[in-house]
Length: 381
Figure 1 (tube, rainbow, N blue to C red):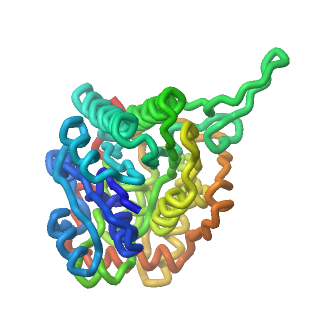
Figure 2 (cartoon, rainbow, N blue to C red):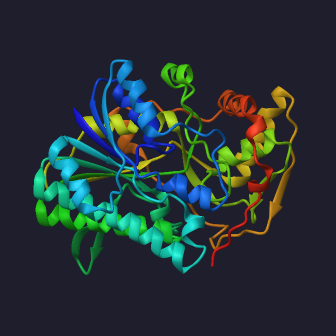
Figure 3 (spheres, rainbow, N blue to C red):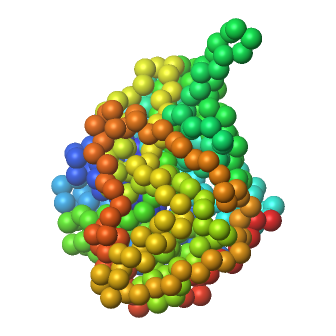
């Protein structure tokens, strides 16, 4: 297939590009390095700095892949549509959004930056598809955070309602707890609107927090590490815990630690992307899949890390700190996740070996850990 990946430089974008490139798809990678710029501005950095996307693309092509790239801002409709028109993709994987709830909640400027980037890129992509190639399959990375923590089971995107003896299938209600997650709800609404109005085809992947690293011969041979963030702004909770443990600092649990979410290994994220490509919706239809494999509370994750790392002689304590976020800490949470399993996903479950393997990766680059960014410095405004 001819696949365009927007936001191809990131924690998920780059592994997705490598995975699909070696599956012999023809790729167009797009990124403006906006996340790198924000991380630098906010004094955050990934565990290992990665070369530019252009450098990595050259190596992919030397390895026999068919990959091109464009360093453009997807908020620029003219530039995005020109590339889209030239490449004529069969599918576009949309990662080109600011993926930080804490950043979106700092203040007015950061809030507008999040809304502008995330809605602007999504709308521009929609217009490229509807104006240039309506059979192009949009795969947008959503988030389980769109749903919030409702007191009923979370279905996979849709809910059948019976009211006054009449029935209707509605999109499952969303009520996010950060502006970032609210922007993702708006993305979903935009996509659903244009799916109905212009008969485009969309898959929206409601993904839980991702953890882990990508073990790949190409990445390891060229030392092209993924963008493994571990700070309070861009790092996901399990990755943060493991870095905190390796740095010999306590695991920092926000609030009570009773918050429950659905989690997924990065390997399964790549598998789900491939399954979504292989199972596109019909024109005028929108697939929504809850993309996670297991549910844990933050306390359960912390205890798993503590227990697992004792096997490699890392003893770490668990500290509960005041929650910098505004969120429900004690709540019901039961989300459905059968769609990807029905497509054939063989889930990777979190165990001691996986936690230890991530820790061994972090140990390899231990000297780069910046302890100054381990504690949360941002609070919900």
